[in-house]
Image (cartoon, rainbow, N blue to C red):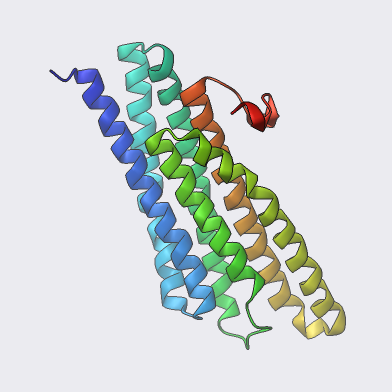
Length: 223
């Protein structure tokens, strides 16, 4: 017979997965709005943030109620405390998707500065990291979680590469500066989304193995 506590944990897990799905959609649509120069889609991303924020508050309340009323121990306690952190990371990802969309809207009103090559590549890696961090959480898969934070350096390198290239465009023609700055910030927002995915992956390791890998307290080889 299922305990009420187990049912509440299941509801919490479902809400986290639901929030993650909404965030994944927001990120995908923000990137798509840039590549396809679709401002209507960008506006939809901005509007979707209210739902994500509302769900964050609901999950936070669930976590507080479980901690206060059920006094969980061991892995259940780690799951609930990590859920609070995961929700915060997801909410920040949603905000960053909105930031991308808000940069896309003025960009789409101007001629395209350059062909989009590295940003879509960076976006693909970042979106995969988001998906895999959530899959790792759902399946308690520490191997998949480790693969997420191993990809973070690739995203960082692409971000640096994009910045250097766009800096060249700005130096060549002051008329390129505003569009280049928008693209630099979009790249930066994608890099930050990857960082938040890494944070979620680290929480997965904590839930499953009770090991803190934040700031690499344990080496990756131990995970």
